[in-house]
Image 1 (cartoon, rainbow, N blue to C red):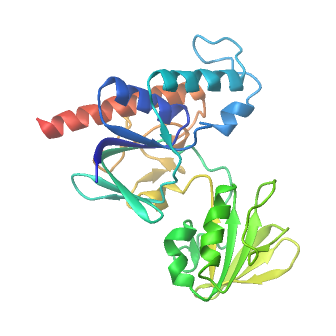
Image 2 (cartoon, one colour; image 1 turned 45 degrees about the vertical axis):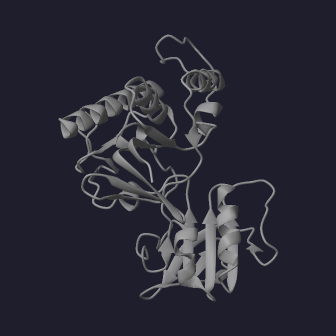
Length: 287
């Protein structure tokens, strides 16, 4: 297995800025995210404070980002990292049924704008999870409800349906669905996750209830504390210093996930700093 110098999680302005600087410094790296880079950026009507681009439309700035990455021969790996574990001298990054290794990690995951469901945090690890394919074998022959915020969740739901006795799928997005015939498509929204010592049911906004032994919440971004065990949080964001260092050695963070203001130019600058800090960290380790 190849062990990269830097693994970058997130493909917004902070993540791609980090990738560009890792490339310039001749480090081996991998960047995880979406080749579309940022839906939020694509939908921005105009941006006035990005240096060198006056009143540019979000989709045009996005195109500039994509062209820059193409010129630098940087490819985004479209896989979602579910867990990052510090192994001392390196990190293990878990993706469903496989893993990656890197000497340093840069978190550029953005901010998750969806509020936790009532009962979500209470039952975390007691029936509530964020990776359906990771934990699906635990629910063989049982009742599972999947709440997904993107189409990527359909693939995970199809996998779970091969193991579970019954799967309910609640999409928090619009569009056509490619689900196995055995999956129940729920045209309602979740309100609360209930149970005594573990998950027992999901209450919908309509008042209807779904029996559930497990509930998977497939969000666009895994909460930082679930992504990286032991990561220090401050005011709801990843705590970093001016060099974008977290409390975990070799782990850096940049962009919206480290705090306000949520600005593209601020995120790009922090991605630059995080990459340079990772490069310096590696140099010190190798000295």
